Amino acid sequence: MIEKTHLLADAQATHDAGRALASVLRPGDVLALSGDLGAGKTSLARGVLAELGLDEDAPSPSFALVIPYAPPQVRLPIWHVDLYRLDSAEDAEELGLDDALYDGALIIEWPERLGWLWPQTLRLHISLPADGPRRLTASLSPSWEERWPFR
Image 1 (cartoon, one colour):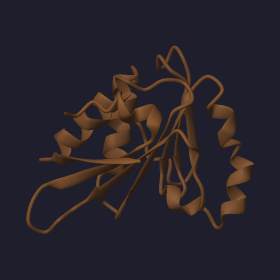
Image 2 (cartoon, rainbow, N blue to C red):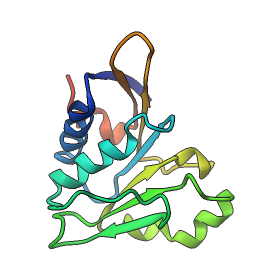
Image 3 (spheres, one colour):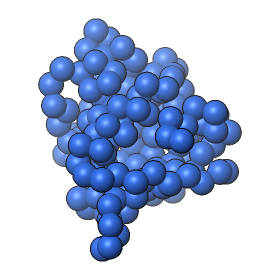
Image 4 (cartoon, one colour):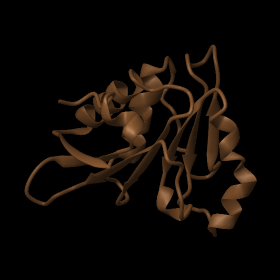
């Protein structure tokens, strides 16, 4: 896997990074968003959803665990998933996450709760260094190497 870093100056830059990722998102893709509480995972996810056509501000799926979006609400079916409250990786099987990948994509916050990820996953980590802007660090799977939107 190739690792890339992109700086995020503020909350708007985090949202815009999500929009840029959505512009190259395709069915079968998985965006795995990790980072501390308040790092900007949901802001990035909201940028993805806005670029896909969602008119309203997407709620956090913290309590629902999964919020699915489908056309005409968005141009690509997508499930926004938050696994923070997941008790065990086995509980994730009940969510049917593979079903989303037939014709859509997944955005997963707190993916480390699964214990595994799909081979085509774009692993994104948002960190908040004390001495500068947020850092978006990506581990690019082969399917993402040519599509990474930040140069």
